[in-house]
Image (cartoon, rainbow, N blue to C red; front, side, top):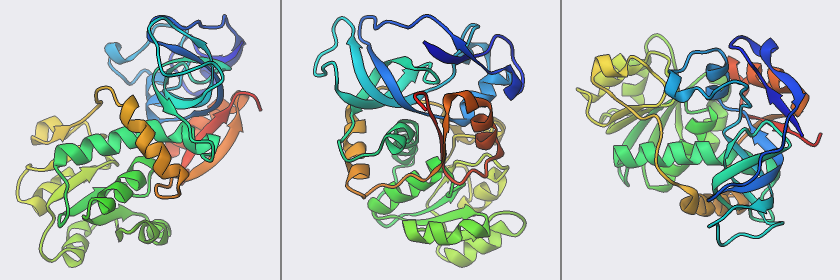
Length: 301
């Protein structure tokens, strides 16, 4: 099969479209014929050699954490799914024509493939952090990086819980945040004053999805480190802030959010859909942080 692989750390130039042996479903796994594979920031961080050894797979690496596709092989012990079913979920090596998945959910027929591929990581991350923060009706939540894929999903889910969301983003994304139900504020110098003006009664919780150095002002706004969680700022430990880097099984809950997306009640922006051979370009778009949505690869394109 065709797959993107790399055998050394480096820039996008280390990514190559190669012929590799097809994977086969082991116990607890299904194999997908990949229709769409989503690109995540973790993909280029691993490629650059920035992650600790326990998060770095052995060479040769085929990137890709999430995908949507058609089940074409079922491993021992897997029930509730049949060959030919359309699913979305977490994968091993999604930048390929075939990938293995053990955590997945049915794809609603009216959910487009690109959105399906973009949902798993953003939804699981958002739900996990909102649960850690115990966000509920009446809370005011400050969400850094609100226009990113994770941030935008978190905005919608927090609003659905009855919270007021103040979202930081560049001015060009303020209308987008308003459309999701958030109160937008510009990031950068003077952020604390702008948040105080938007939330004169203070903020109850802070979700940092940006990792842009806003934890100190968040601590100031909260009056301490309670109910602040980051998924992106490595300075968290030194500041006494909770860093959340991953959760447990989520496949069963993913179906609920896939249905919300299919019904138009949960939106994910897709920035660009590219053929598999353009994986380097896709990762660079993701790395800029300005893609304005999820970048998706289409192995069959």
